Image (cartoon, rainbow, N blue to C red; front, top):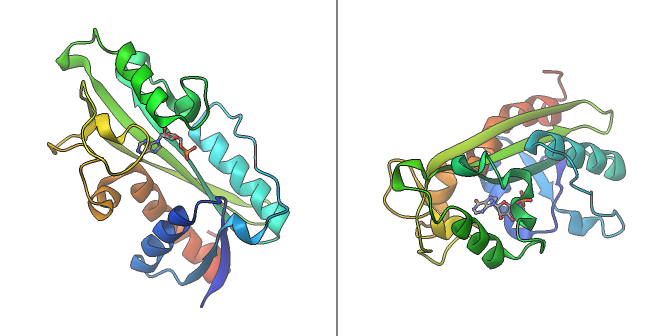
Length: 206
Ligand code: IMP
């Protein structure tokens, strides 16, 4: 048991994943998801950067729940598409959360792009906010290339077409532990752990 911290998600898997990262980093908090706050409405992600969306979600969640809150925003940035789909990753095909349609559209858009120019990265911004309005944001990324046809059944979203540099398998072919160790989200949350330890566990300013 430690200080309570809200993660701005209704996805229990994400709550478990962040709890494990914080425990590994020696940060003793009790993480709760938004399922504990059924009346708090979903935050609209209308920012143009991952940082803006993560900060907005964390600040609004902290204000609505009266507890320190953590939020993240992430996506795929493709070199040949000038960094898109970026913050539009979840709704690139026009249908929010349709992973297959989003992936198919990105693959079609880069179908004429040569092997030497298929660079891409996953980016994640992770923010911590206090009910007082104090906030802190960090980011993480993993660089790699887009292959031409999906491989693997793990992960979600664009994982079946993304091979991180230094690896031969897609992130959909990795175990969750392997992916967490190198992923944009794993890196961002691990980078946020010291701020959580200072502001939430110790109650000190950074
Ligand atoms: P959100 O941060 O949960 O809003 O996710 C944004 C979107 O980015 C997801 O719907 C996926 O399309 C994509 N995305 C973010 N992280 C990953 C990842 O680790 N693997 C594959 N796709 C991802």
